[in-house]
Length: 449
Image (cartoon, rainbow, N blue to C red; front, top):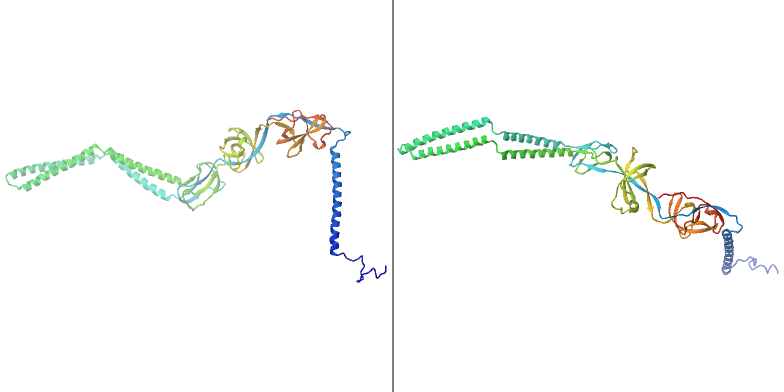
């Protein structure tokens, strides 16, 4: 072929010509098909290789060496003791926000946050000037009422009685004079020496003198008889009323002082000196840190095994401390569905603070039959179950079990295990189903419920 025939009109080689778009679309599926065939061949080869390896691992040659294992004998238990640790907090036995029972200006606040206080200690004072002035006024009235009462009880003085008797004698003398004058005027009237008007004037004067004499005589009799009992009792009632007012003022003065109701510490201070506060406004908050209680929430079933007076060992910041059950809450908390157990700490000088975390271990009897096995004997099974390897006729077999609880290095299980089964205690990764082994029996540590 000539050079002219091997080149196209543009001078390019025929084999070096680029493919068209249709030619590219035709060749792409062909390459994809070839790649898929190659990948499928590789996957099939890997699967056959894995299957051959798994078969080689699970099948135990008859001439394999016999493996020694340690076993324990399964012993059925009708129940077991389950220990649980519950967390709570330390609380103060008492916490009070103290306030004055009356309003006034706060003159003194004698404590600050963190200060220790004793029962009966004065913590603050209000302005009491007006109360003291009112007390002085009532005291003066009491003194006056007492003097009047003493006068009423003692009765009139002898001099007063003597004066009244003298007044009575004078009045009697005047009456006698008027009687004589009236008798003379009566004779003169009969002799028409005086007018009837003058006679009647003397007659009326005599009647008035007799009335005055009678009044003075009654006054003298009253003095001689003494003061009436009713008047004395009325004065005594008045004096008792004043005494009651003095007592009320004394209470008001006491209310101007803020006193600690119990020994403890000041947790918070709400106001400062100079504030005019109303009755009931919180001034300080005091907590009783001398009697700290442990409040621990337990499930109702676990709390049912706790008795008032039982002694327990608690843990606070890793340190053990003895406590006695003081009471149990009568209800179940809706938020946590637990029942509070309140314990009184027997600190023995150990310093604890409200708010610290405390832990309590409670042992609960669970009525579930099963078997105690070493946790190292368990292997993962299917569908959430666990498995145990047992030895039957010197050959490894499997038992599916359910894990109920784990305590320390042992686990409590139930399932297809039968009493007397020889359970492989450890090294389960070294054996497979159907493998021949020799056994060495061990003893599981005895557990006490």
